[in-house]
Image (cartoon, rainbow, N blue to C red; front, side, top):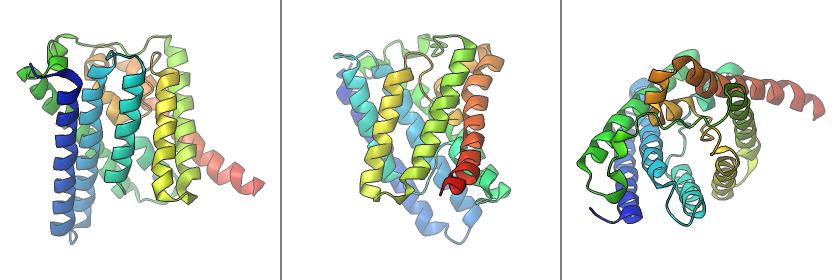
Length: 253
């Protein structure tokens, strides 16, 4: 087997390059078909995040812990932010402008569908790669089943994912006025801090599509619990953010 972290970095870099080429091709060929263009670009972008995060999940125990995992989380979040400009890759990020009236229900629903399709495709692709066992982190990766990211009570996990979704979505809205070259680092730093704070309790995902891609086995075993924590809680957080942003902040200003 090829060496651990290096082979994973090579695999994730290949995914990023391939998605970049697919996005560029779609931009050139499908500008005249806006719905198909929006669907494919969102699907490619979400595929990149889900595939890379699936691979990163295998590197959580690489020494020194947790410095290596957090450094990789920060680095790849910056890379995603720079390479996937214009895509949300998160149903909550799509729901927010839909709820606020900035995106039509048709376009929003199309993007959310693309995100979940990408989540499934990324999981299938990564499991195929892991089944080849060409790299050290992939050995036995498919035998784990549900990795049980929820290491606390269901109510506490629900509150954590709700809180993290609120914090993240508010930060994204607040950072819209920041220079893009600084904004991507601020968002990456926030995500890394949230992962450090709650990763050992819920995984700190606050992204329904990514949660399904990472833990589909858990959704199958305990659908109600995982759908409440990883789907409903982030969506409620998004609705709360829309209310705070549109109703409370304007009054203060």
